[in-house]
Image (cartoon, rainbow, N blue to C red; front, side, top):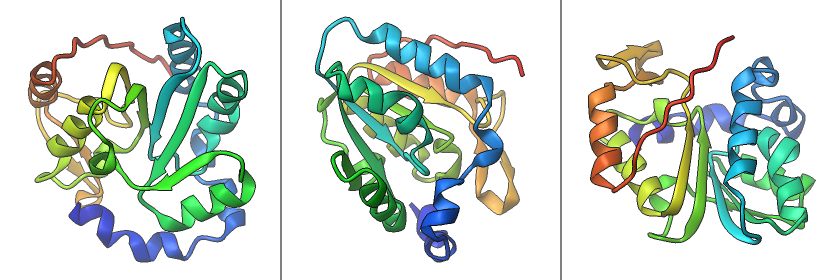
Length: 189
């Protein structure tokens, strides 16, 4: 988790006001509604255990997952590495379950559905497979991963390692190793 720990000082400078608009440039990205429809389509029984890993500014929670939780079709738990984000989420949404933690804090087989958006690119090269494996091992039914930089034919690094595009073969290998099939949904912007 080297890259995540190095970012702690940066996130500590955020205020609750800046947190509420965290990732504003991405609010209308079409991948969001595609992911919401995918999650809604996975829900055929009520009260499914659902984990969002890296909830950031709670945008997906507010625009989809809170409603599903309130209708008792999912039991939402949000995990974020950044303690300030967890504090802000608990201030704005005190009746919900937000925890400090990340991929490696997920208990095996503990959630029916797991969801993460634009998080895996921030993992250090030596831990990204562990993060992905931990998410999949915690998932009983379906893991939804929204990539900021979809896997490609090679590992590409931007911004001094803060943003990685992982090798598609390596990603597929970990997913298959954990017993999951892959379904890709392309997003046209």
